[in-house]
Amino acid sequence: MPTFNYSFEVDAPLTAVSEFHHDTRALKKLSPPPIFTQIHDYEPLGEGSLADFTLWFGPFPIHWVAVHSDVSSNGFTDTQVSGPLKYWQHTHRFTAVSANKTRIDEHIQYAHAQGIRGVVSRLLFSKPGLYMLFTARKLLTRRATTGRKYIRVTA
Image (tube, rainbow, N blue to C red; front, side, top):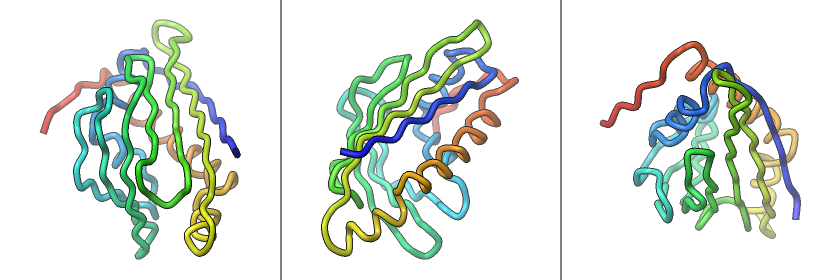
């Protein structure tokens, strides 16, 4: 099964990084143009919570439902229940490097489906595509957490 790993550091304390990622609005904030995220239902992040959303790649919608597990202040895992791939499991881990610096490790295991669904997922979720997506997410995470005390606001 293919895997994708990506790590980076942000100049923010572990608590700020964890709070940012535990906020249900983070998915929208981490989706770089031309990807736009439409949230249908996103339960507060917790063991067994579901996220139901559509990723819009320009005019093309990709519906996705994921379940969360292994949720802690040091990260969580989301596993695709339904979506564009045959299998997708994404683990986010946060590690304090110092009092004001955190390393984020992203690990994804995935498998493409057969047929047209597999063709689409290979175009959107190939290693080069994932690298570009997570490079953008690194920059967006840094912008959202660096130099600021992140305050969780409930809507």
